[in-house]
Image (cartoon, one colour):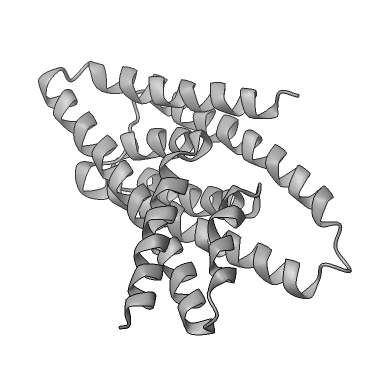
Length: 206
């Protein structure tokens, strides 16, 4: 691997990690889903969200490249932003109801549903807004298609890695707290869910 390619990979990893970790909508939706999982399963929430996000970005890229003359991209972006806000409220409400009923979503159908929700919401987030597109713009500066592709792939990997790590931290921290104070578990999950709802409402505000 040449020095230029290595630099592109490192830059892509850093940009992807920063993009994932600095998005309040990203953290707000992943936290309640991860908190309701076991320590061993929490990381999968962030991983699936990251994979979904990468798929969403790829979908937007393909549409912009091949269908920009046919699709009202600005209108679609506006609606996708609204859907992101709605998804934050829906996920937060779902997790909050489960917490109030004493269900934390560990192994079983609840855990599988959480993984599917993370993948679906990650895909939706990948299609919304332009911050991730700004993150991959540096790829246009590389003269080599291979180097540009390496940067974009590293950006996706950085996003997946950052959210995987974040969800693992949430899950493991919540599990430790639950062992020390079992009654706190539902309250903590509920707090994450409420935060997701608040961010969703703010996202939809004009």
